[in-house]
Image 1 (cartoon, one colour):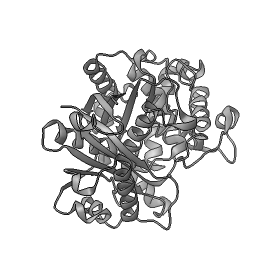
Image 2 (image 1 turned 90 degrees about the horizontal axis):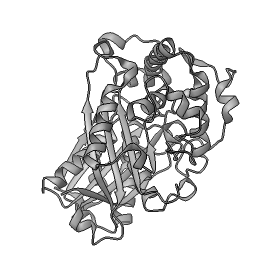
Image 3 (image 1 turned 45 degrees about the horizontal axis):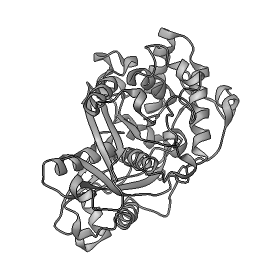
Length: 388
Protein backbone atom coordinates (compact mmCIF):
# COMPACT_ATOMS: atom_id res chain seq x y z
CA UNK A 1 0.00 0.00 0.00
CA UNK A 2 1.52 3.31 -1.07
CA UNK A 3 2.06 6.17 1.33
CA UNK A 4 0.66 9.69 1.25
CA UNK A 5 1.98 12.95 2.66
CA UNK A 6 -0.65 14.21 5.11
CA UNK A 7 1.22 17.04 6.83
CA UNK A 8 4.48 18.93 6.74
CA UNK A 9 6.63 21.71 8.13
CA UNK A 10 9.48 23.76 6.72
CA UNK A 11 11.71 26.07 8.72
CA UNK A 12 13.38 29.00 6.92
CA UNK A 13 16.80 28.03 5.58
CA UNK A 14 19.78 30.26 6.34
CA UNK A 15 22.22 30.93 9.16
CA UNK A 16 20.72 30.00 12.52
CA UNK A 17 23.44 30.70 15.05
CA UNK A 18 21.00 30.57 17.96
CA UNK A 19 19.80 27.09 16.96
CA UNK A 20 21.26 23.61 17.26
CA UNK A 21 20.57 20.40 15.37
CA UNK A 22 18.38 19.40 18.30
CA UNK A 23 16.32 22.60 18.36
CA UNK A 24 15.82 22.51 14.58
CA UNK A 25 14.64 18.90 14.75
CA UNK A 26 12.28 19.61 17.63
CA UNK A 27 10.69 22.63 15.92
CA UNK A 28 10.22 20.85 12.60
CA UNK A 29 8.77 17.70 14.21
CA UNK A 30 6.27 19.58 16.36
CA UNK A 31 5.13 21.77 13.47
CA UNK A 32 4.60 18.76 11.18
CA UNK A 33 2.51 16.94 13.78
CA UNK A 34 0.38 20.04 14.26
CA UNK A 35 -0.10 20.47 10.52
CA UNK A 36 -1.17 16.84 10.11
CA UNK A 37 -3.35 17.06 13.22
CA UNK A 38 -1.85 13.94 14.79
CA UNK A 39 -0.12 13.31 18.08
CA UNK A 40 3.30 11.85 18.79
CA UNK A 41 1.64 8.74 20.17
CA UNK A 42 0.02 8.14 16.76
CA UNK A 43 3.39 7.84 14.99
CA UNK A 44 4.67 4.31 14.38
CA UNK A 45 7.98 5.05 12.63
CA UNK A 46 10.47 7.93 12.93
CA UNK A 47 13.02 8.50 10.15
CA UNK A 48 15.65 11.20 10.54
CA UNK A 49 17.77 12.43 7.64
CA UNK A 50 21.05 13.90 8.95
CA UNK A 51 24.29 13.83 6.93
CA UNK A 52 26.57 15.39 9.58
CA UNK A 53 30.05 14.27 8.38
CA UNK A 54 31.56 16.54 11.04
CA UNK A 55 29.21 19.53 10.89
CA UNK A 56 27.72 18.71 14.28
CA UNK A 57 29.59 17.37 17.34
CA UNK A 58 26.43 15.46 18.24
CA UNK A 59 26.30 12.25 16.23
CA UNK A 60 23.83 9.36 16.78
CA UNK A 61 20.95 11.79 16.29
CA UNK A 62 17.86 9.66 15.60
CA UNK A 63 16.68 9.95 19.20
CA UNK A 64 16.80 13.74 19.09
CA UNK A 65 13.35 13.57 17.50
CA UNK A 66 12.08 12.18 20.82
CA UNK A 67 12.97 15.52 22.42
CA UNK A 68 9.95 17.02 20.62
CA UNK A 69 7.38 15.03 22.59
CA UNK A 70 7.48 12.34 25.28
CA UNK A 71 4.84 10.48 23.27
CA UNK A 72 7.65 9.42 20.93
CA UNK A 73 9.37 7.36 23.63
CA UNK A 74 9.96 3.74 22.63
CA UNK A 75 8.92 4.33 19.01
CA UNK A 76 11.19 2.99 16.27
CA UNK A 77 13.62 5.76 15.24
CA UNK A 78 16.41 5.45 12.69
CA UNK A 79 18.78 7.88 11.06
CA UNK A 80 19.36 7.68 7.29
CA UNK A 81 22.40 9.00 5.43
CA UNK A 82 23.12 9.02 1.70
CA UNK A 83 25.17 12.20 1.16
CA UNK A 84 23.13 15.07 -0.31
CA UNK A 85 20.21 12.66 -0.89
CA UNK A 86 19.98 11.93 2.84
CA UNK A 87 16.55 13.57 3.14
CA UNK A 88 15.06 11.44 0.38
CA UNK A 89 16.68 8.34 1.87
CA UNK A 90 14.71 9.06 5.05
CA UNK A 91 11.50 9.64 3.06
CA UNK A 92 11.92 6.35 1.21
CA UNK A 93 12.69 4.50 4.45
CA UNK A 94 9.40 5.72 5.89
CA UNK A 95 7.55 4.63 2.75
CA UNK A 96 9.12 1.18 2.97
CA UNK A 97 7.84 0.77 6.55
CA UNK A 98 4.36 1.84 5.47
CA UNK A 99 4.29 -0.35 2.35
CA UNK A 100 5.46 -3.34 4.42
CA UNK A 101 2.53 -2.84 6.78
CA UNK A 102 4.84 -2.09 9.70
CA UNK A 103 3.61 1.48 10.11
CA UNK A 104 0.36 3.37 9.65
CA UNK A 105 1.86 6.81 10.28
CA UNK A 106 5.50 7.83 9.94
CA UNK A 107 7.35 11.03 10.76
CA UNK A 108 10.27 12.08 8.58
CA UNK A 109 12.59 14.90 9.65
CA UNK A 110 15.54 16.23 7.64
CA UNK A 111 18.10 18.50 9.28
CA UNK A 112 21.55 20.02 8.93
CA UNK A 113 23.47 22.81 10.59
CA UNK A 114 26.47 23.87 8.52
CA UNK A 115 27.09 27.58 9.11
CA UNK A 116 28.82 27.18 12.48
CA UNK A 117 31.61 25.22 10.81
CA UNK A 118 34.75 27.12 9.67
CA UNK A 119 34.95 27.41 5.85
CA UNK A 120 37.98 25.14 5.53
CA UNK A 121 36.19 22.44 7.51
CA UNK A 122 33.03 22.85 5.40
CA UNK A 123 35.00 21.91 2.29
CA UNK A 124 36.58 18.93 4.03
CA UNK A 125 33.23 17.69 5.32
CA UNK A 126 31.53 17.98 1.93
CA UNK A 127 34.36 16.11 0.22
CA UNK A 128 33.32 13.10 2.29
CA UNK A 129 30.47 12.78 -0.21
CA UNK A 130 33.05 11.97 -2.91
CA UNK A 131 35.50 9.09 -3.41
CA UNK A 132 38.41 10.18 -1.27
CA UNK A 133 41.13 8.02 -2.86
CA UNK A 134 40.55 9.93 -6.11
CA UNK A 135 39.02 13.25 -5.01
CA UNK A 136 40.28 13.82 -1.48
CA UNK A 137 42.84 16.45 -2.46
CA UNK A 138 40.61 18.36 -4.89
CA UNK A 139 41.19 22.14 -4.59
CA UNK A 140 38.02 24.06 -3.60
CA UNK A 141 36.48 20.92 -2.12
CA UNK A 142 33.20 19.65 -3.54
CA UNK A 143 32.90 22.76 -5.71
CA UNK A 144 36.19 21.63 -7.25
CA UNK A 145 34.70 18.21 -8.00
CA UNK A 146 31.77 19.79 -9.84
CA UNK A 147 34.13 22.29 -11.43
CA UNK A 148 35.89 19.28 -12.93
CA UNK A 149 32.55 17.92 -14.18
CA UNK A 150 31.68 21.29 -15.71
CA UNK A 151 35.06 21.53 -17.43
CA UNK A 152 34.63 18.04 -18.86
CA UNK A 153 31.15 18.91 -20.12
CA UNK A 154 32.45 22.15 -21.69
CA UNK A 155 35.25 20.22 -23.39
CA UNK A 156 32.72 17.79 -24.87
CA UNK A 157 29.89 20.15 -25.82
CA UNK A 158 31.34 23.67 -25.83
CA UNK A 159 31.14 26.67 -23.52
CA UNK A 160 27.89 26.52 -21.52
CA UNK A 161 28.40 29.69 -19.46
CA UNK A 162 25.25 31.34 -20.79
CA UNK A 163 23.13 28.29 -19.97
CA UNK A 164 24.53 28.07 -16.45
CA UNK A 165 23.84 31.78 -15.92
CA UNK A 166 20.28 31.31 -17.18
CA UNK A 167 19.74 28.49 -14.69
CA UNK A 168 21.13 30.54 -11.81
CA UNK A 169 19.08 33.60 -12.77
CA UNK A 170 15.89 31.52 -13.10
CA UNK A 171 16.31 29.94 -9.71
CA UNK A 172 17.11 33.20 -7.97
CA UNK A 173 14.08 34.83 -9.58
CA UNK A 174 11.88 31.96 -8.39
CA UNK A 175 13.41 32.11 -4.91
CA UNK A 176 12.04 35.62 -4.38
CA UNK A 177 8.60 34.03 -3.87
CA UNK A 178 9.81 31.32 -1.49
CA UNK A 179 9.38 32.44 2.14
CA UNK A 180 11.73 29.65 3.28
CA UNK A 181 14.61 30.57 0.94
CA UNK A 182 17.93 31.76 2.28
CA UNK A 183 18.42 34.20 -0.62
CA UNK A 184 15.33 35.99 -1.90
CA UNK A 185 16.92 38.25 -4.47
CA UNK A 186 16.50 38.36 -8.25
CA UNK A 187 20.12 38.62 -9.41
CA UNK A 188 19.36 38.74 -13.13
CA UNK A 189 21.11 37.03 -16.02
CA UNK A 190 23.83 39.63 -16.52
CA UNK A 191 25.10 39.42 -12.94
CA UNK A 192 25.12 35.60 -13.06
CA UNK A 193 26.89 35.59 -16.44
CA UNK A 194 29.58 38.16 -15.85
CA UNK A 195 32.69 37.53 -13.80
CA UNK A 196 33.10 40.23 -11.14
CA UNK A 197 34.45 40.86 -7.68
CA UNK A 198 31.07 39.80 -6.32
CA UNK A 199 30.81 36.83 -8.69
CA UNK A 200 34.32 35.40 -9.13
CA UNK A 201 35.29 32.01 -10.50
CA UNK A 202 35.23 29.40 -7.73
CA UNK A 203 36.29 26.20 -9.47
CA UNK A 204 36.88 25.59 -13.16
CA UNK A 205 34.19 27.40 -15.15
CA UNK A 206 31.88 27.64 -12.11
CA UNK A 207 31.32 31.07 -10.58
CA UNK A 208 29.92 31.90 -7.17
CA UNK A 209 26.40 32.15 -8.63
CA UNK A 210 26.76 28.57 -9.89
CA UNK A 211 27.10 27.18 -6.36
CA UNK A 212 24.40 26.46 -3.79
CA UNK A 213 24.55 28.07 -0.37
CA UNK A 214 25.94 26.79 2.92
CA UNK A 215 22.84 26.63 5.09
CA UNK A 216 21.13 25.54 8.29
CA UNK A 217 17.58 24.26 8.33
CA UNK A 218 15.05 21.51 8.83
CA UNK A 219 11.88 20.22 7.22
CA UNK A 220 9.50 17.42 8.17
CA UNK A 221 6.73 15.25 6.73
CA UNK A 222 4.01 13.07 8.18
CA UNK A 223 3.33 10.13 5.86
CA UNK A 224 0.32 7.83 6.23
CA UNK A 225 -0.85 4.67 4.53
CA UNK A 226 -3.46 5.42 1.89
CA UNK A 227 -6.48 4.22 3.86
CA UNK A 228 -5.55 6.43 6.81
CA UNK A 229 -4.70 9.33 4.53
CA UNK A 230 -8.17 9.28 2.98
CA UNK A 231 -9.64 10.15 6.39
CA UNK A 232 -7.38 13.19 6.84
CA UNK A 233 -7.51 16.82 5.73
CA UNK A 234 -5.10 16.43 2.80
CA UNK A 235 -3.22 13.61 1.08
CA UNK A 236 -0.45 13.78 -1.53
CA UNK A 237 0.26 10.30 -2.86
CA UNK A 238 3.52 8.79 -4.04
CA UNK A 239 2.41 7.58 -7.46
CA UNK A 240 5.87 6.07 -7.80
CA UNK A 241 9.39 6.27 -6.44
CA UNK A 242 12.78 5.01 -7.51
CA UNK A 243 16.28 4.82 -6.10
CA UNK A 244 19.32 4.00 -8.24
CA UNK A 245 22.74 3.84 -6.59
CA UNK A 246 25.84 4.11 -8.81
CA UNK A 247 29.56 3.55 -8.33
CA UNK A 248 31.26 6.04 -6.01
CA UNK A 249 34.44 6.58 -8.07
CA UNK A 250 33.88 8.90 -11.03
CA UNK A 251 36.61 6.97 -12.86
CA UNK A 252 34.23 4.01 -13.20
CA UNK A 253 31.56 6.00 -15.09
CA UNK A 254 31.01 8.65 -17.73
CA UNK A 255 30.40 11.37 -15.20
CA UNK A 256 28.78 13.92 -17.53
CA UNK A 257 25.99 11.46 -18.37
CA UNK A 258 24.53 11.16 -14.83
CA UNK A 259 23.51 7.60 -15.70
CA UNK A 260 22.07 6.83 -12.25
CA UNK A 261 19.84 9.89 -12.51
CA UNK A 262 18.58 8.70 -15.90
CA UNK A 263 17.88 5.20 -14.56
CA UNK A 264 15.96 6.53 -11.54
CA UNK A 265 13.83 8.83 -13.71
CA UNK A 266 13.09 6.03 -16.19
CA UNK A 267 12.05 3.62 -13.44
CA UNK A 268 9.86 6.16 -11.66
CA UNK A 269 8.06 7.29 -14.82
CA UNK A 270 7.47 3.70 -15.94
CA UNK A 271 6.04 2.76 -12.55
CA UNK A 272 3.85 5.87 -12.56
CA UNK A 273 2.70 5.10 -16.13
CA UNK A 274 3.49 8.70 -17.07
CA UNK A 275 5.70 10.60 -19.49
CA UNK A 276 7.92 13.50 -18.46
CA UNK A 277 5.54 15.77 -20.39
CA UNK A 278 2.72 14.80 -17.99
CA UNK A 279 4.48 16.46 -15.05
CA UNK A 280 3.37 19.93 -13.98
CA UNK A 281 6.76 20.79 -12.42
CA UNK A 282 10.01 19.28 -11.18
CA UNK A 283 12.06 20.06 -8.10
CA UNK A 284 15.57 18.96 -9.03
CA UNK A 285 18.95 18.91 -7.33
CA UNK A 286 20.84 22.05 -8.41
CA UNK A 287 23.71 21.82 -5.92
CA UNK A 288 25.62 23.44 -8.80
CA UNK A 289 24.10 24.83 -11.99
CA UNK A 290 26.01 22.28 -14.08
CA UNK A 291 24.11 19.56 -12.19
CA UNK A 292 20.73 21.00 -13.18
CA UNK A 293 21.91 21.31 -16.78
CA UNK A 294 22.96 17.66 -16.99
CA UNK A 295 19.78 16.59 -15.16
CA UNK A 296 17.70 18.10 -17.99
CA UNK A 297 19.33 15.56 -20.26
CA UNK A 298 19.17 12.66 -17.81
CA UNK A 299 15.44 13.16 -17.16
CA UNK A 300 14.75 13.32 -20.90
CA UNK A 301 13.89 16.99 -21.27
CA UNK A 302 16.79 17.47 -23.71
CA UNK A 303 19.12 15.29 -25.76
CA UNK A 304 22.67 14.64 -24.58
CA UNK A 305 24.74 17.77 -24.94
CA UNK A 306 21.67 19.94 -25.60
CA UNK A 307 20.55 20.80 -22.08
CA UNK A 308 21.41 24.43 -22.75
CA UNK A 309 18.40 24.68 -25.06
CA UNK A 310 16.02 23.93 -22.19
CA UNK A 311 17.59 26.71 -20.14
CA UNK A 312 18.03 29.34 -22.86
CA UNK A 313 14.68 28.74 -24.61
CA UNK A 314 12.72 29.20 -21.38
CA UNK A 315 11.37 25.63 -21.20
CA UNK A 316 12.13 25.42 -17.47
CA UNK A 317 10.80 28.84 -16.44
CA UNK A 318 7.68 28.96 -14.26
CA UNK A 319 5.59 29.62 -17.37
CA UNK A 320 7.58 27.17 -19.53
CA UNK A 321 6.88 23.68 -20.85
CA UNK A 322 8.20 22.09 -17.65
CA UNK A 323 8.84 24.45 -14.73
CA UNK A 324 11.98 23.34 -12.90
CA UNK A 325 12.65 24.47 -9.35
CA UNK A 326 9.74 26.89 -8.92
CA UNK A 327 10.94 27.05 -5.29
CA UNK A 328 14.25 28.56 -6.36
CA UNK A 329 15.98 25.23 -5.87
CA UNK A 330 19.03 24.69 -3.72
CA UNK A 331 20.60 27.65 -5.49
CA UNK A 332 18.31 30.22 -3.82
CA UNK A 333 16.75 28.18 -1.04
CA UNK A 334 19.99 26.91 0.46
CA UNK A 335 21.29 23.36 0.84
CA UNK A 336 21.32 22.10 4.44
CA UNK A 337 22.35 18.61 3.35
CA UNK A 338 20.07 16.34 5.38
CA UNK A 339 17.07 18.64 5.04
CA UNK A 340 17.19 19.09 1.27
CA UNK A 341 15.32 15.99 0.11
CA UNK A 342 12.60 16.45 2.72
CA UNK A 343 12.29 20.11 1.72
CA UNK A 344 11.82 19.12 -1.93
CA UNK A 345 8.94 16.82 -0.99
CA UNK A 346 7.34 19.44 1.27
CA UNK A 347 7.43 22.11 -1.43
CA UNK A 348 6.08 19.69 -4.02
CA UNK A 349 3.22 18.70 -1.72
CA UNK A 350 2.43 22.38 -1.22
CA UNK A 351 2.26 22.82 -5.00
CA UNK A 352 -0.11 19.89 -5.47
CA UNK A 353 -2.39 21.11 -2.69
CA UNK A 354 -2.49 24.62 -4.14
CA UNK A 355 -0.77 25.99 -1.01
CA UNK A 356 2.49 27.25 -2.56
CA UNK A 357 1.65 30.96 -2.53
CA UNK A 358 3.78 32.96 -4.95
CA UNK A 359 5.61 29.78 -6.00
CA UNK A 360 2.37 28.18 -7.20
CA UNK A 361 2.18 26.52 -10.62
CA UNK A 362 -1.45 26.90 -11.71
CA UNK A 363 -3.33 23.62 -11.97
CA UNK A 364 -0.41 21.48 -10.79
CA UNK A 365 -1.43 17.83 -11.11
CA UNK A 366 1.77 15.75 -11.03
CA UNK A 367 5.11 16.74 -9.51
CA UNK A 368 8.55 15.19 -9.87
CA UNK A 369 11.34 15.30 -7.28
CA UNK A 370 14.96 14.41 -8.02
CA UNK A 371 17.40 14.41 -5.12
CA UNK A 372 21.03 13.46 -5.72
CA UNK A 373 23.78 12.34 -3.36
CA UNK A 374 27.38 12.92 -4.36
CA UNK A 375 28.24 13.07 -8.06
CA UNK A 376 25.09 11.31 -9.30
CA UNK A 377 25.85 8.40 -6.96
CA UNK A 378 22.65 8.28 -4.87
CA UNK A 379 19.70 9.05 -7.16
CA UNK A 380 16.15 9.33 -5.82
CA UNK A 381 13.03 10.21 -7.83
CA UNK A 382 9.50 10.61 -6.49
CA UNK A 383 6.40 11.22 -8.62
CA UNK A 384 3.65 12.85 -6.53
CA UNK A 385 -0.04 13.52 -7.10
CA UNK A 386 -2.81 14.85 -4.92
CA UNK A 387 -5.10 12.07 -3.66
CA UNK A 388 -7.29 14.19 -1.38
